[in-house]
Amino acid sequence: MEYKLKPISKAGIAEATAKVELYRYLNEPEEAESICRDILAVEPLHQLALRLLGLSITDQFVGGAPDRYREVEETFQKLSDRYERSYYKGILYERRAKAQLRIGQPPHMVLPLFENALECFGEAETIRPPGNDDAILRWNRCVRLLQTPSYAWEEEFTGFDAHDMPPV
Image 1 (cartoon, rainbow, N blue to C red):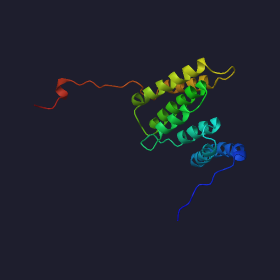
Image 2: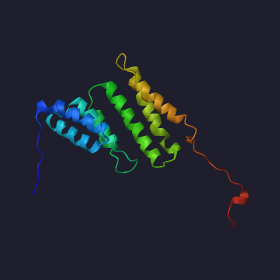
Image 3: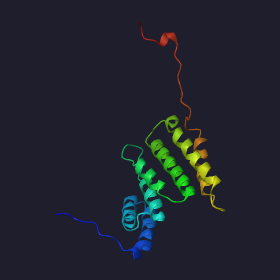
Image 4: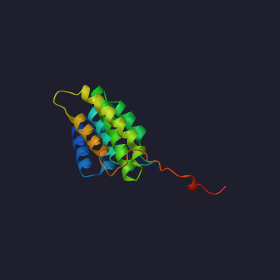
């Protein structure tokens, strides 16, 4: 038996968007993603649905191959506002880095992702709407993480002496 998706009505988009936000708050990102896709099927460039779709996918990041980084990047590239493209690209890098830290990736390997996030947040800050400090808040969170003493952000090389070499 083949099942087909049913389209939602344009009139139902506002209510569907509210459900997306609710499912994200309930930590059910798959449900939120599905609803975003329903909205985008009716209105492909719906800006809020694009933002929420990207965020819903990043909510599912586990730090490995199943993560859909490229899909999120392409989704955020569809945002029409330059500030939002930069800001949300920063969130993509930040969440990717955090997911990789959670699975035990060495901090020095994740550092470039945080640096990319900071670059995006810095750019967003320069073009942000008046009174919008979101990029600064994200910047500060990344910096605080980078200042965490328990992470070794610099690659540590251990030296060895000649006596450490195996016999020839």
